[in-house]
Length: 279
Image 1 (cartoon, rainbow, N blue to C red):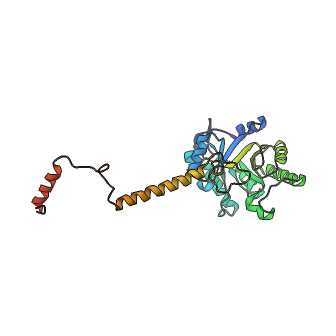
Image 2 (cartoon, rainbow, N blue to C red):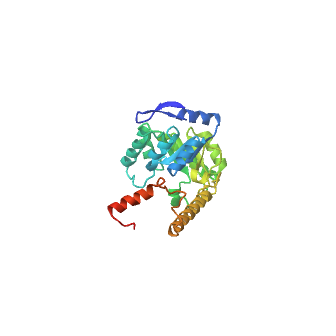
Image 3 (cartoon, rainbow, N blue to C red):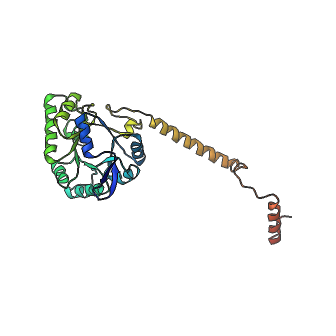
């Protein structure tokens, strides 16, 4: 663990710093990243040995509470953050609270603005799902030399804007490998093979908690089946409880508390003296 101060000036520890990640890139040592959509996933990521986590800025605080020392990227993609000031304000909020980097799919102007404020910024190239209407739908990118060169140019623009990292989504493996060698940016790859610096998947996909995972995902667990089994068992137990209550079978002597020997008779006698009803 490294001793650090957060952007908000609070002393804490981190499993990784940016120089550590750059050193891993230089050494060819792959790092792992998982995106957590809920606090339970964030806690599991922190406990698992995964190197870093990404989480929406809207849930950053609860994720950080269960992963206090894990290198964490706050993704700022909320539709209500319309203006540059909106984005800057949200970036400052999560950075002050301890976010280690800020991810955005917004314009180069936004990337440059955040970088000028001293924030570690991560952009996004290749398939950007929210922009897929202008790139021909959800499809693999960089399968031709021209398209791979265009992706490299997008990364060059992010470099010039001051980014420190880039998510590269669904790009042909060969293109990703070559591009990672040519950029100083930390490349976070999802669906782009193992040629990048950080291999990235969603925790829900990794744990098998997604009904229709993407082609590039792999489930290393079966949380969805377990979740369904838990839901069925919960319903079965509640049904059995309601049935037992209606049948007068619960509560029973196994859980009831009895008065001490002779005390029930004394209690009834006392009640008779107050109001004679037991004759």
